[in-house]
Length: 510
Ligand code: ADP
Image 1: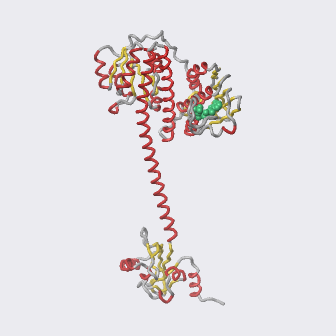
Image 2: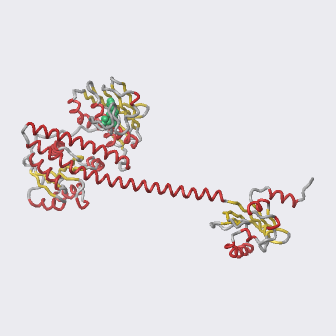
Image 3: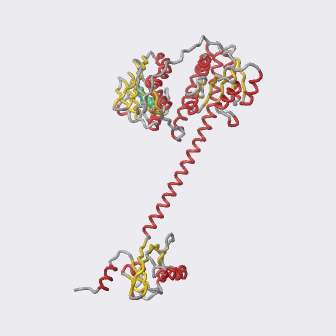
């Protein structure tokens, strides 16, 4: 049986997925497919011959008549109400979001308009959910940012406020040790020194972890020679290894890597310190080799080793093999968790192989240097001819009266001529008073937002010479920036031990 063209058109339109209407020039519904009745819950007879406005909420009807007339005058294919939220209205008065596209149709000499209407309830719902999800994510990010900022502020305060009294204690301890001769008092002072050192180590470890977590530490990768770090470590650990009668062996190497030297240094210091700590006899070796295009820096020891089942826990905070969480022994179980955080930050890799009773090898895998680096120059020979402290004039710039006084006492006891000042202005005043100072010892964070770095520049300009300076700071990033470029500057991290400070000063004075 053949269908007429009109029947064919109707059955085609009825099977279309969208609701479709044909409206005449006067806005009267002339045709509607099956989906229109389903969507708006009207019967066929109820809708045909009615104005199109019955399908929209009453409050829009009047305005729509105007829009419709305009459209009839300049008809073209287009979506309706771009940028507007269009609503359809069912027979029972309920509303739902729709999308409508219009197109002109020629029909028997009169101008008709075809409208395709789509129910977009589901899409709008998804859009609304997406908006809510995005807002929630945004809010969560803001909360996290705030928490991070609060943490950074807390850290800045904690690091300054805790380091200051600790610094005072460390310097007073050094002073006392020089003043006291009675053996029992000396012993108490030595124990006190141990306690201060332990406190400093824990404070530093906690601050390191928080700093790494808050994102305050940003690696500054550069090409550098592994040997330059090895050179520093060789000296730094010589005494600790000798104290345990361990053979401390640092191999020479030609490798260069591309990474952040200060952070790599921190990782290696932690690993070497562990290797020495967990090796009762034998040797600890620091070496480097290149393998598959990467540089492997290895710390090998002949120590107690790590049982295989413990290997995955050693990076956890406060985890120490064979030690209950709250009992004490040397260290806090924080070293390797700091190491792991730094390794992640550096985008590097840390591998470990260990055998109980034989020893461990920790290996830091780094990318090679991008450029080839020239061999280092020989270190400048020291021209020191023994300490000569008595005539040496020290300008001491420190805004905290307790730290200033403790430092002054220590330096005076050591034989230096000390001029303590609290601000850059006071320091400048003192310059004109008498002989120029031989060295400036300054804190980094001074009051009124002044910094030790500014103080050094200002005083050097005033004197017209590159005045030797020791900058004492709790901020390791400052330390990294300033020491690399200045031969007359040494940076000490707070809390600095009395001996350390004096040693730095002697080194600078030559
Ligand atoms: P700790 O302050 O206890 O040294 P770490 O986080 O640095 O803390 O190390 C966690 C644990 O891993 C240590 O307590 C120790 O048991 C084990 N460990 C780390 N390095 C070595 C090593 N070189 N040899 C044997 N055991 C090690």
